[in-house]
Length: 369
Image (cartoon, rainbow, N blue to C red; front, top):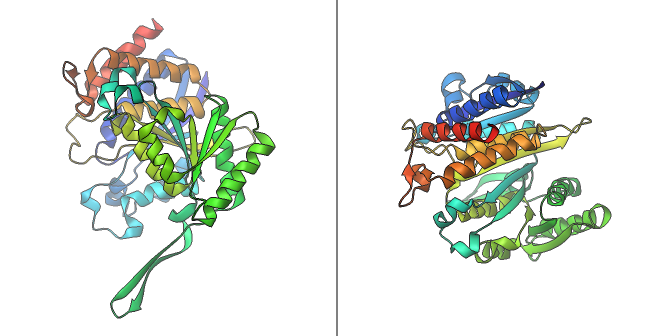
């Protein structure tokens, strides 16, 4: 029996509620699919601040580095708005990404047939949509130096952030995009702002060079990031895999998320470099936030967290059959009319977080007989 170690970090707000449903599916996979998981749990975000005075303890960080995969719920909330910038709940997530060296963020945007009408775009524009955005996660303007706010005197201040990339940083994330494309539609669109930014010009040149050297079989196109933002709402199905930097990836992936109708439906994976055995450090989390306004009410949508675990099955454990099984169970439940509040539409059956979990588990049982 294959054995995998998982660290679960439910976090704040609705995080613990949706992660409870993930744990149920983990237990189902162990019971019905001959998978063995060693599961531990820790604190991150605001709850870690309350318990330890920091958004991520050294002990939890060590657990994350030792695990085969980390599953995270959500962090943050108004309760911690007053803490210092370096101690805010989100700093725990940033530390995980940095110390695990998670440089590639995978954000799929998939429109399930049953939810075509949930999108604000016309059904014919989004029906069948299945794109993957690969965002560089550890470089660019969010981490570049110098940075900060300085006092220039006379009541004037200046804020500085630096956009900086090197060839290895660009090519390692592009390599992830090309490899993914080979297993999908075999197309990569690289997005930057080479017309006004030297870092964008370097990005374009380095991706082009890597393509010529190693991935000529994959179709490569280039698009300015602002043009890509427009094309995502005009004709999103033209894209297969989009690869872009940290800032533009942050923006474009959120835009793509709303093509699906609800941010509560979307998973993500953050991957590090492959080791000698081909294994990568990996963090899996839903795209949605902690939603403190609905926390504790059993109304949150757990599907994004469940599909994030599905991505762990696929990318960390090489269990694509089980990942496909979970995807199919979710699709069938939605096709049957079950809806949490965020994706509710006329004629459907509104359900709670836990009932959605019940329904998906029942569907999994039906699928394996």
